[in-house]
Length: 104
Image: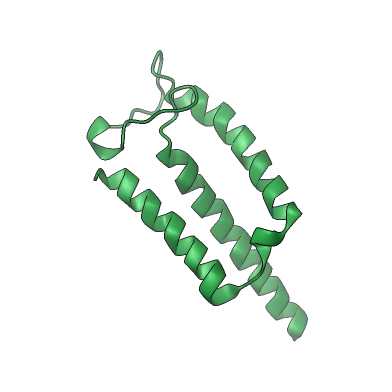
């Protein structure tokens, strides 16, 4: 399995496990979370699509490092998993630390 694909899958599983097994903030049941993810993904498609378009790429991915599936506009699908994991982890930490502060 290509390394970018593998690392993306590991990141997605790790972040989901952090929420479901450790932090348990409940963000996956929150409409605010899903709306924020929709906004992030909208802008990710715009920016990532422009950066990775095969007709004039600014960012070039080595084909041996990802699965080769590109959707939409030539965006490697791994970018969405990686982006989800990164943004979700930040939100998880933010919510967790905020609740910890409130408890004091």
